[in-house]
Every structure is written in C-alpha cells, then in structure tokens.
Image (tube, rainbow, N blue to C red):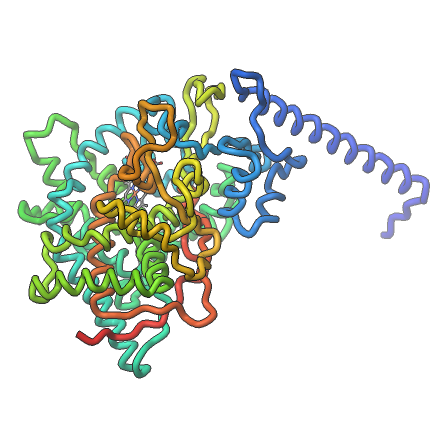
Length: 549
Ligand code: HEM
C-alpha cells in the first residue's frame, strides 16, 4: 500500500529536520570551540603569550593543513617553520603540542623525565606489544629495561658479529645473482631487500631462527603481524576502542592473527625452555637463562613478558635500520667522492684483515661511522617521540598542564641553523671526524650534488652543554638525537650501529651504487600507531654493479 504524504507534512518534516541539523551543528560547534579554547588556555608562557599554532577547523582540527602539505612528515616541519619551536596541533579533537627546542627536549627526556611517561598506543598495538619495555612506564619498565640492558650490552652485541656478517653476505650473493642475470649492472629497489636482511638478522638474534625473508618467503608469522599493524592504523581503531568487538570478518581475522602470533611464540618459548642451552646467546635463551639465574635481584620476566619483549625487539629492530642503511647508500651514491672515500676505507681494512671483517676492523671505520651518523641525523628513522605529562611543569618558560600530550619532533631540530650551524642541509660525514680542519673544509667545499632527498633535512647537529644557556658549543660535540635520550634511549642503539656498519661494509666492498635514472627518494611517516617512524616512500631505486678488486 502506498502511503501518500501531502506537501505540507513533507515541508514541516523537512523544516524540523533542518532545525535539528542546525541545532546539532551549533551544539557541535560550541562543544568543539570550547574544547579548543580550554586546551589553548591551559598552555601559556609565563610572560603571557599563548601557545602558537594554526587555528583548527571545526571537528577536523589541523587535518586540513596536514593534507595540504606534501605528506605528514612535512606537515610537522611546516608547523614548526611557521610557528617556531613549540606549536599546538589538533588532530580532530585530540590536542597535542610539538616541541623542537633542544633545551625543552632535554628537560622532557632527561632532567624531568619522571614527569613524562610514554604516550600509550592504541589498544591493538598495546595488545601486540603487551607488557614490554617499549610500552611500560615506571617501575615495571625499569625491571624490563635492566634485564634487557644485559642482553643488548656492547659485549653481547659483539657476540652477534658472525650473524651480521653471514646474513649481509647472503644479501650480497643475492645481488650478485641479479647482476649476473642482467649483464653488468642491475636496477634494484634496495629498501625491501634491506628490510628482509634486517628482519632475518633480528629474528635470528631474538629467537634463534630467521623468517627466511631474504629467500623471499613470506613467513606466516609475518603475514599475521602485518595484518595487525595494518588494522591498527585504520581510523576506526585509532579513534575507538570498541570497533574491535563488532562481529565483522576483519575483526575475526584480527583475532585469528593474534592467536597465531601467540601460539607461535608460546610454542617457541616452551621448546627453548625445555631444550635449555646455557651457551646459546640469542635473546630468548638469554632471558630464559636469567630466569634460572640466582644472581639477579630482579624478578625475572614471565613467559608472557618474554613474548611481549621479543615482539617489541623484532618489530623495532628491522624497519629503522633498513631505512637508515637505504638512505646511507642513497646519499653516498649522490656524492661519488664520498662513496669512493668510504669504499677506500673498507678496502683498506679488508686487505689488512685478509678478506674477513673482525670486530677490531669494524671499530676502525671512522669514515663509515660518520656516514651512518650523518644519515641518521639527516633522516632520522624515528621522526618523533611522544610523551604525556603527569603533573604541571614549566618547559623553557611555557607552563604545561598535567595530562598534556607532548610530541618531540626531531627533523626541524636537526635543520635549525641556530643550533647546528651553517649549511644545515648538506650531507657531510666529515663533520664528525676528529680533524676539525677537515670538517671545516668539507663544509666550505660544498659539493654541488643535487640534494634531492625531499623532506630530508641536512644539518649539523650540535649538542649544547646542558649546564650552559648558550645553544652553540664547540664543534666537536655534534651528535644526533636519533636514538632518543635519557633513561629511555633506544635499547638497540649499539646493536643497530653495529649491524648497519657491517651491512654497509659488505655491500660497499662488493658493489658500486648509482641512483637509478629519474629516481628521487622521498621520506614519509610510517603508519605505525605507536611511533613516528619514517620510511622511504616507494623504496630506494639504485643501479648496482660489481666492483673489481
Ligand atoms: C637506526 C635504528 C634505530 C633507531 C633510529 C631507533 C630509535 C629509537 C628511539 C628514538 C627510541 C626512544 C623512543 C622514545 O623515547 O620514545 C627507541 C627505543 C627503543 N628501541 Fe630503538 N631504534 C633503532 C633500532 C633499534 C633496534 C635494532 C632495536 C632492537 C634490537 C631497538 C629497540 C628499541 C626498544 C626496545 C626501545 C624501547 C626502549 C625503552 O623504552 O626503554 N631499536 N629506539
């Protein structure tokens, strides 16, 4: 039966609907702008200034500015360029400040670090990492960190030397195969290849077996991991905690992925505990050994905590290093004279050590070390850190309320000539060398290579003396904050530096690198809900050829 509606009823209905929409819109507008004004009034300078930032649009906040800029990474950069070293940003209705001032960062990460806990990740990532060193705060974090510090000490990392060399040589063999197939040289997207290399290395070190990623196998474990990470970046999971409970196929698959990962790691932990090899030096065995040790006063990690930390190590221990080594090779390829210098250093060690890289040989690679530090400074694989304050605090004159989300943005800091001197955009590994004259000449003798790494700031990183108010100190104390600072500085710093140098050593010894024709790399922010990691969008396309020795 057709219901006939007369025109007057329809008109009245539409009028009421319009009125209702208007009321809701007005209510939302009042709610949103009260929220914005409240948030803005909470942060003020002791001299009366309000915190700068682009005024947010209703409900969207500063998302429009972000989408107008080239990518999310450059958005942060632009905010700081426009508004200075502290800026307020609204991600829809979620407000945060971002700082890029060295003294502020030091205050947050070192001097008053107790007031700034790690910002909790979204619930999917929290479930993935569970109760690990990465996500914990307070005494629990300290217990995990002290137990893991042993496992990642310089001495322990050196014991992984053969693993690093062996896997790097496997990658070199693979590339040789490509070159043989295509003649004298081969065009390779080196980023996914390096991802596979470092994934296999970190898995071998963490759990005693690799994922066969270098062989091109997609291990089931990784598929599940990727699925969870992908789901966690969806706005429905970023902005709600209840979506995961809906009976949807994607949620069922998510649950299966979690169960599969737990099963895999639980089984592995049980097997290793039963086999118990006291001479083994993989992270899992070392953590299980700590459990049986009577020497430690710390309460050992439970099996579940071991599982959580293994995942944290595997996930964090490959992407960052792959990004950094890809960028190091890209930057070297853009500067042939620096590439030649790095290769000459490698060749010299290789000749002296008769074809075998040793720990002592590695420690003599001053130039290669500078190349790695320089690339970490220019393109930090973690572009930012996030904290949340527990009490009101004063940050360089700015009063910050309790429960304030604070982002630390590294790239504009690295690009600030006020901190880091002239020519901040240049790639100059020489600046870290002891010979200050050489460092200076290298800066003056700027090569004309095109600096085409979009979004990649090139700068000199000077660490000011914390006790002095002056921002510039003597030239010999440059170092990047790429691994963070203070008690929560990267657990894998030595590990990462060691494996990156080994991989670069092997690859530079065997191959020459040129940037692929018409290729320009671009750095983008990763989508990982927890960290502001960066990655080269579309990878890094290079032409590799075999060196003749
Ligand atoms: C170039 C490579 C790497 C970079 C740039 C990097 C950077 C960082 C940074 C900046 C932090 C501090 C985060 C914060 O304070 O919020 C951090 C923490 C951490 N990193 Fe790395 N990382 C790298 C490689 C690694 C590797 C290879 C591993 C493991 C094998 C690792 C494991 C961790 C862990 C477990 C933490 C948490 C430490 C804690 O909170 O106590 N990282 N990393």
